[in-house]
Structures are given as structure tokens and as C-alpha cells.
Image (tube, rainbow over all chains, first blue to last red; front, side, top):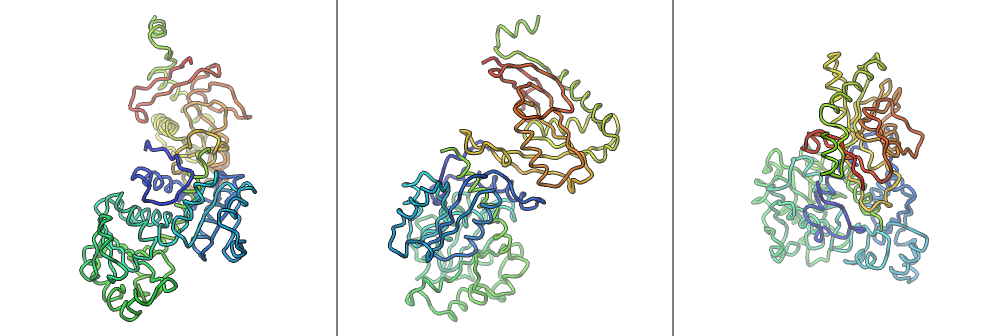
Length: 309
Length: 187
């Protein structure tokens, strides 16, 4: 392990090298173990202030970042969209600069516009962690998915990973695609042609519109949530038809190899992209993803917040 | 004679060779046996990287004498340091491994060089986050002085008076893939 971490920000997996990604995953091992101690708190970021700046609603990611920061002994402020001055017309930049003037050291930003965290990172001395920007990337979700696969299967290189569902609008899919390809997995995207256009093949992945062709050879299936709130009618075939064509139903799950991992970034639409029996079944690692998300975020906050700037 | 020759060719003076290191660790092993009648309650917790190897060697030496396998562990201090953000390079964090529960046990922190004492302080914090051991002791191969905290070792392989500008360079076979030795480098 000769790589050193030199970035103050984590904005996208696309810009990281395979070595940097592996370095984060190895650092995550150490922080995962902290969660099993009697005292689940270490002093690494004592005295630092972290602002959880969520301009788009989120419960699990915000909570996960908050707990990660608290376990590293940082002070945490949560700001949500409707509570912030953004509703009064203040720009993102002004809000952030005001918070920086209060000596905030780190920002975790969730924003509906792609590139929002990069915009802030360029303008602030503080660290910026992208917690999801529009349909662009959600790097810590990508990392926790990689970590979970590596933990359960012992490796990532050579595995066949199917990402199923709404790829077009999914930042989770993008972060997964970049991370998985860098670490040598084979990625197949599956979904209706409106949500999984062939253009994705340019990234180096396979595209399929027939889920039953892909399931029997997959080592990992990652089911993405159908984002009802983001859907426009013309993209989406309707829930009934979606379940029939792409849902991981109990019957369809019989096609999976016995050791295939079933993943979902949550929140789950039970009975839509995945049947309850499968989500709670033996192959499901959905709750491991949540546990690992905390460790991954501790690692990322430690690395980005710990470097001297 | 040999030392004098090395002085002229190499600015780093050899302080200990493999034999001297072995002898020092054997003495530490004996002292640990003497001071801890209940050896089954002892955990040798090495600080990565060389402390881990030294802990394993001491455990083997204790086994040679008493045929008791003393437990060993790893205590990572990186995330417990108080200087994160002030050093040019962030220390790499590793996983700690300690036998649990720690209550009733004597944890002996093992490291290669004792200097300011800040690493040991961080190690004690790390140990306390796993539980409350009956006692904590400290074993080091080299004590080079210059403490910045009220910390003193219980077992010392060699006391080495140094100046702040000198560097103590320890090499161990498994960790460094080089022959065992300790050198003092003038800078």
C-alpha cells in the first residue's frame, strides 16, 4: 500500500485512480472495525466542524454522514433545503461562503444539479464531499457498493455485475459503473431502452434490455430504485409492465446463481424492482450495504478532512 | 575495529545487530514472565508495523521458556493521533485486533522505538476504546529519550541516548525484508 491520499474533496469516482479507490477501501477496513468496539468513537477529527448541506431531501445518506462524522469526533451541523436561505434567494455559493466564514472545515453536499459539489470545491478552502449531485455521481454510494462486493466475494476483478433499473437518471449507477470498471469488473446495464440507452456502451459496459438473459451469469445484481419522483411518463412503461419485464420477482430470482449477491441502494420499493422475499432473503446484502456505508464515509471524511491544507 | 570502519563509510552507526536484538528481546521476555505470574492474562499488542513483529517474537521467546502461548494483537494508533491535519502526510490507518474482552487482562504495548511518547498515549486511548484492561504496560526495543509526555517504559531492550537531530533506524527481517539491525543516523 504505497498510495497516499492527497485530495481535500471527494467529488466523483470517475476522477479517481484504481489505486485511490483501493486505498479508500483499505482504510474502510480499519474504520469498519471501530463500529465493533465498546467505544465506537475515535478522536481523528476532533475540533473540526462538518456541515451536512442537503439541498435535496435525504434521510439515510444524511444520517450515515452525520453518524460517521460524530464517530470521528467532529461537530456536525445539518442544513436542509427548506431551512436554508436558499429558499430566500441566496445562491449556493453565498450560503457556503457564509458557513465557511463560521470556520466550517468540511461540507457534505447533496444537490439537485450535477456539478454542484465541484462548483463549491473550487471556491472553498474547506473539504467538499459529494453526497449526490443530480444525475451525475454519488461517490460514497459507489464506494460502499464496491466495499460490500469486495467483502462478500473477496475480490472485484473479473466479477460480472448487473445494474438493473433506472440508469439514465441514476447517479448511483454512474458511480458504480466508474468504480467497477476501474477495479476490473464486467458491467451489464439492464432496463427498458428509454432508461438504459445504448450510448452507455461507450463507457465500456454492456447494455441489455432482457433481464432473463443476464441473471443466470451474474455474480452481483444491483437493483436501482425506480425514481417515481423523477420520472416523466414517456420514459417509464408503467409499474405493472416494469415488474413484468424487469422486476426481481421470486420466480425470476430462481435464475440467479446461488452465490450471486443481491444489492439495492435503498430506499426499496418492495414489490416493484424487487420482491420482499428476495430483499430479505439469504442472497441479499442490502443491510450490509448500510453498515458498510457508515465505515466508507468515516474513511472518506478521515482522508479528506485529515490532510493538511 | 569493525565499528570504526563502518563509521567512516556510512554515516549510520550500527547500534545493534541480529544477535544483540535477539538477546534484548529474550531479556524482555524473561522480565515479562517475572512480572506477570498469570501469563495467560497477558496480551502483547504491537503497534504497526515493527511493533507487531516484535510482539510476535517476544511471544515466541516466552513460549520457549514457559511453553505458554501468550496472546498477541495489533493496536493501530493512526486514528487516535492528536496531530491529524498538521502532518504533511496522513498516517495510514490499519485495523486493530485485540482479544476481547480486555477486562482482567494485562495489555503490553509493544513498539520498536520510544521517543516523544505521543504514539504510546494514542495507543492507550485506542486500547481504552476496546474496554478497560486490568493494567497496561509498555515494552520497547529502543528508548531514545526526549519524552514530551509523562510516559515511561516497563521493559526496554536498549537505552540509547540520542540528540533530537539523530534518527534511529530499525530494520526487522519480516517487516522490512532486510537483516535485523538498529542504526543511529546523524543528520
